[in-house]
Structures are given as structure tokens and as C-alpha cells.
Image (tube, rainbow, N blue to C red; front, side, top):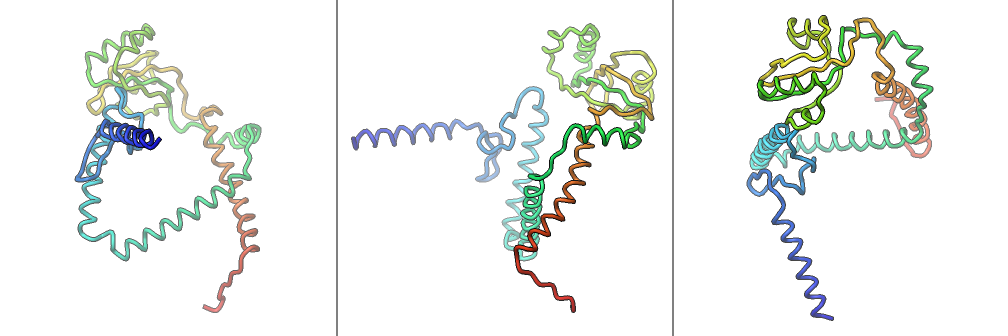
Length: 257
């Protein structure tokens, strides 16, 4: 039995050591490592976000070098910094407590959001001409030209084989040059591009156009309305929370200072 326990201990230890050794290291600064175990976004990297991931690693290296250098100067023992840290932590705890206590009592229905939308529709008028579009972003102009033909023909199989970055959303007039704006907003082109912007090329597929002064759809402003209602209800719940807490503790305020 003793030998079996020893064997199991050695086996488990060796497996865990092997797993640790096989953990992919993305960067190292002195004894600090950025690896698969401690990276904040475990799904990184993949083809579509490789450049973003590379930038993230570079930033981690820079920040770690700066932190280690600051630590060597004794800043971690600086009294004023410790005081600011403690004040920030105190504020963070209070904010979390208030959010946790008030959010439990806040209920927002779809009907409330719809009513708010109707009663405050003037708040949701568009201030610019906009289009809702899909954006295909590539690093190479030749590839962008080929992809444009596939987007025009809506050939999804061939589109999906391209290593592009995809975004979708509203584009305001004025984001691109006046020449590109003309193609997007004035012409009847459903697909525009390639457009060069900051060393990358955009293929833009326009799905819908909306004039300045038109009403934004409920689905577009739903989250904004939700947050407005939430903040209003939270301010009310905060008053109730403070009244309750003040009745449960002893406190004193010197009015003569």
C-alpha cells in the first residue's frame, strides 16, 4: 500500500511538472513569465487577432520592465503611493459593495425600454449620415481586390478561406476621405474598396443607409436606454441603501468644525 502511494505521488508530480514545462511561454522578463497559464485571454492567439496579440505581448514586456525598474528604486515602499493605493482599494470595495447591493433590487423590463424609447425619441435622432456595413480588413492590396470579387458575388466559401479581419457596425460620414464618402453614401455601390487606411485595406459591404435626423432603431439604442434606466433606478436604490445602513450602525458628525 505504501509503495502504491509513493508511486501515485511520483506519477502525479511528474505529470504536473511535465505540464508546467510544456506550458507555452510568450515572453519573459527576468523571472516574470507571460504564458498560457497566466495570460488574461486564454483563447489567444489565432489568425484573426495575431497582430493584436503581438501588440499585447509587447505591451506586457514594456509594463513588466517598467514595474521591475520601479520596484528596484524602492517605489513599492513609498508612503505616498501606498496611501493612494489604499485609497483606491477602499473606493473599489465601496463601489463593488454599492453595485452588488443595489443591482439585486433593480428590474428592467422590455416594456420599460420600449416606453422610454417612445417618450424620448428625440434623443435618438441621428446626428450624421451613417451606413451599416460589413468591413473586411486585409494587409495586402492584391488580396483585397480578389476578396472584393468574392464579396460582390457573395461567395461565402471562398470569402471564409481568406485571412481577413472582420468588423460590422455603423460608419459615420466623414470617417474616410470625401472621395470614399461619395462612393459609400452617394453612389449605389453595395461594395466599396479596396480603401487604403493606415497601411491596411478595407472592403466595405453596405447593408443599409440612414440619413441625418432619422430615428435610430430600438435595437441600436437598446443598451443605451437600459443603462439610462439602470442609473436612474440605482440612484434611488442608493438612497434606500444608505438609509438602511445608517440605521444599523452608530455614527457621529461634528457640526462645529
